Image 1 (cartoon, helix red, strand yellow):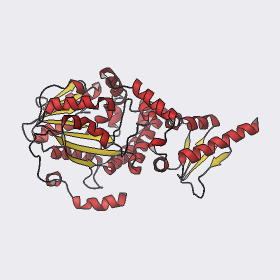
Image 2 (cartoon, rainbow, N blue to C red):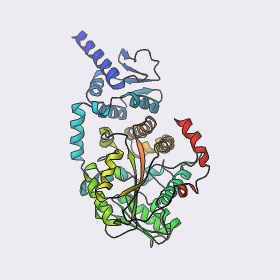
Image 3 (cartoon, rainbow, N blue to C red):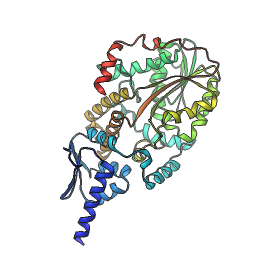
Image 4 (cartoon, rainbow, N blue to C red):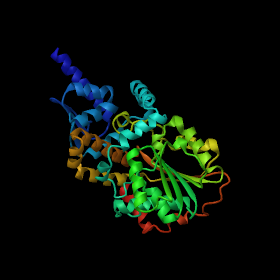
Length: 415
């Protein structure tokens, strides 16, 4: 019996090593057994306490790894981001996911469906964790989306302000125009547009804590006559506007609701308006990791560029500009992870050690995904078919961006 158990353990270990880890330079240790890919020097060691955890990883690595790490049952000797980046770089192709993973993903999508009530519940679970928590590791404006770094030396605060201005320049906002924003976070972009570009903004969000915070900011800045923060779902947007903006919101819509989102946009800006989508993306279709959906982003879905077009094409919107800011998001994640680690004791006091490990894995995994190319960040500018030209060239995008000549050297250094 002992020999059979030992044989099963060795088989599970080798199975995970060859099928899940692949050619990643990682050593896996379970009890008195270990596995390292042939002819490789391990850069990190993954220690698993027992064969029960190993069996769970073999059956359902998507969820089991995150749960075991959050519980403290898995120990990592080495750089967590580097380990995850190595695994992402050698993992199986999307089409090779097991039948169990595909079925479980569909089941989770059904239970976390982004209906009117479902979306409110999903958003509440993530964004209403408490403003004090996010203040520990986001920038001072509480922007929880990809920053834009004019130079690699820019601070996170500088890069987030640059991002807001970059969005406004892409849209060529003009004084007196009306803007509707879907998913406004803590309100910084809406206030930036009003303060610096003279537009009027209606901003929608179903997160109670974020809306309350944004309203107070507007009151303190005396911009509440120019910016209205509305606690409601994007599907209930009404009225006519010159511009539609959604930054970091498409990820919470769900593929099944893309046509409805497109209908809402068309109802808002018609055939003459212009719009902007800023969203996490993929190079090819793949459901969001189930552990992320279970513990971090319930109802989340990250589209490929082709899938994102399902929002725009049925309503004859014309895409004017597409940009991938993948490396900018990697750098943003570096800042967030570093700040989170500096604040981990405060976070543990607010919640517990399991929460700290859960969010560390989420942030580290996201950084690794951007570095490895598993995740992208798309900015899409679009217009109605009767919209006048926004600009004859791309020059206005870079008029106020300092040291843009440094960008090629930075790109080369990070590649």
